[in-house]
Image (cartoon, rainbow, N blue to C red; front, side, top):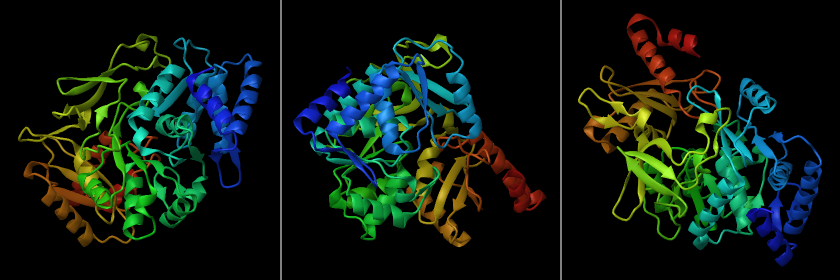
Length: 463
């Protein structure tokens, strides 16, 4: 029996009728959850099959299956709902390939790399639960009672730091449909439905991307959400702009920035709720050792077992993250950007484009942004505007951001697009990351079109 199930069992004995999981239509107590997970695990034990794809649409059934696969010592491969059909077929082929896995593999979490090809990270039960235990220690002061799942369950961060952590703490996990939450796909949110769900279910804990935090901040500013109802708002997944962070803190929202990667069980560092340090991702969790090698973060202490179908990667002692960072005199970590994304200007200045992009996206009317440049190309922003935003408003937004930035990091030219960056048009990965090489090519074509042809012609060709 693993440590998570031991805690579930203890909570079922101590408070059998306390709600463990709730949806729009039903709820399960801790006692009922333990019974259903044990029953399903017994069924799985009787099957010779060792690797299972987890592709269950009903959230409560998804959680039960995930816990049962862990308890039954099977290998679970969650399928992200945002994966394309080709990517899902790839996972199916991999699951049927019978290729060796690192011993003790319990979960293979697939993420889209910069090329869109899924990359499988093999984790043990210990990898996952070591992270959970460290997180429980870091957020103990928040006293979380109800966590609302917003990210897809197949995303390791929500799976481990959301569901597992909430159950570890004896809290209630709320699982709602995308329709109820107002989520459309992986990049659109209907604010009215989102606010209604928060008001009805009253969660005190959420895991948020910066875009979702912006929605929460907007809801509080407009009086639709009560800031005092929250105890813990963990923010990660992308660069959080200082502007948005300041707006959230001014409303006294309990935001805690964190940093992590799948190869380390999802979380490396997190601010403590009682000692938030704005602009940083806090101190490394107690199980994580983080050092710098020429500015690059190197982590050890809970490294993955290895990558799927890459035996040379098995059992690493440490992981070079590709992220640049620095520590302050209190040991708190600030993330400076991805090494491979850093723009070097013609004056030799190093610029993290995510820094500028996060500030641009914090402006009203800007839905998406991509900043590119190099020694030959001045800092250039591609802006996807909200439907009602005018060019004059976009110009004003860029001017406001530039006033916040040092002169070397200011946007020197920008162009407005009406079509968003998506997986379909090849400008986003399946996990919502920008495909920067494709965007650089697009920018070169768009700005060349200003002299050679209409922008619409190029846009039609690209999109």
